[in-house]
Amino acid sequence: MCKKVAIYPGSFDPITNGHVDLIKRGLALFEGELIVAVAKNPRKATLFTAEERTKLIRDAVGDHSRLTVTSFSGLLVDHARSVGAKTLLRGMRALADFEYEFQFAHMNRRLAPEIDTVFMITSAENFYVSSSLAKEVATFGGDVSGLVPSNVVDALRKKFTEKRKKS
Image 1: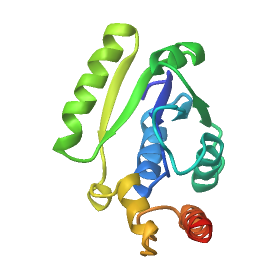
Image 2: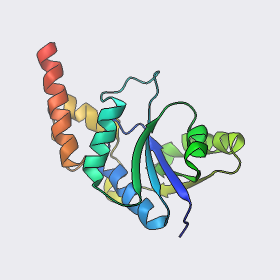
Image 3: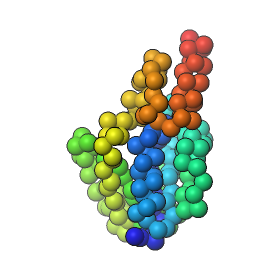
Image 4: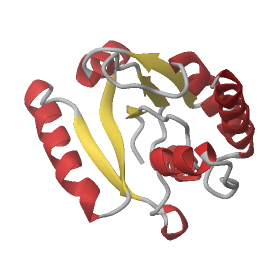
């Protein structure tokens, strides 16, 4: 186990059961603080605001003494340095994720050689789950329970009901 601060970054739009699984496993792997860092990317259209995503994560995972949920903008490595993190935790669902994650890890390593990336493979029951897939199913009123935490099921239902009323 490592006592260093680790960051699990992502857009988490919304958090899925796969993300929750990685958070729990990250807490088991690292003895230090695990920071779930919600990315604010102005070029990315998200369904939920950064504040909503942060709250959804907190509600989904509950309180834990070594878990912090924050948001950030800018370069991940700059945020990692600002909080003293030495490790980035990244999840991989399938082979398709590898190329992107490989490039991401190498760029981060180039920008911040003191920060390492640890890859964790998602569990078999969650390898097909993505935030995009959950949103797509929810868009059409499909059942996303089992894909996302129950608080997210409710938030998706509410968000898409509001969108339908506006249309």
